[in-house]
Length: 436
Image 1: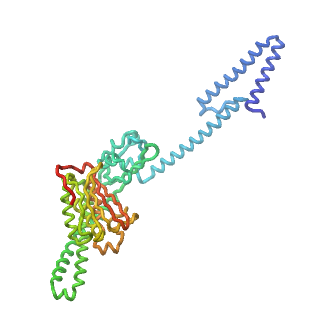
Image 2 (image 1 turned 90 degrees about the vertical axis):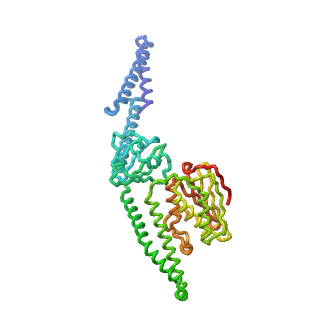
């Protein structure tokens, strides 16, 4: 069967031959050819009109019927539009399934553009954040969820960890929000109801605090009796070593209870630390005296302090954090090693750093050092008398001050713990101290 261009050219040739024959018979060859070309052009114009009309109303009409090249054109367009309809139907079905699946999710989902305008959200997000559809579509989410912690989370653009906040509806509901960037400057907000986890964490903190308070009294009594028994010469002769071991373990338990109480207090007080001026130079010298009195590590501690820098924060908490870092450095540094404490300013604010030439820490353990009771070397940690809570306290103190802890360490070469404070926590005075 002849189709397309061959049929069209054959028909045109037949029309011209017929026109020549008619023109030769009537002695009007020119007029006959003109009429033939006009008829051919009219045919193409009619088909162009039918094509345009079909493309404009193609959803309601089947492809026009024709022959020759126009039959091929109509067939090609018809197949193409049918494939497009099938692809569109599949895309719509896929989109419907995605929306149904996200609607059924227990977590809230909000799609936003680069400026935070809401493009779509599921029912869970609307219920947890008190958003309405379609009224809030196109609105900027920061204008609808105006919690200070969430605004700060958006402005910092650090989405590695979720932000915890209370739900707009109140009623003791707590939410965990996390932003996941995707595509071209698009954002996906995941909202989870963390009320149960929050209550469990609150119960854990209350249990630890109550248990620590209850343990403090019997430990005090035991320490007093052991101290009295140790002063008895007759008992010292027969029970000297057991008494010393009991006093040592009681002191260790007392230290653990004290650290647990301090950690519970820091976790309970989620507020931001005050902006009271703290003389870090004087604070560090006090810590050095206390560390040297432990009788562990090197005989001295080198200080590199910028006396013109003051830290704005809570002195008691800062003493607890800085002393934990210095005491740890002294415990794990041999007598012939070195420990250096520095307090200097930089472009990003200021940094308090403790550097030692001790045993160092393998890289695999560094991410978990601030966990409660985490031990790199359990036997050595127990022998040194540590509680395993020092770095957890450091982490919480720095969180109260909007600071972060950086840890650099290499086994056999030592460690460096750096507390970095933002410029809003640093002020300068006229005096400048030297090196001690």
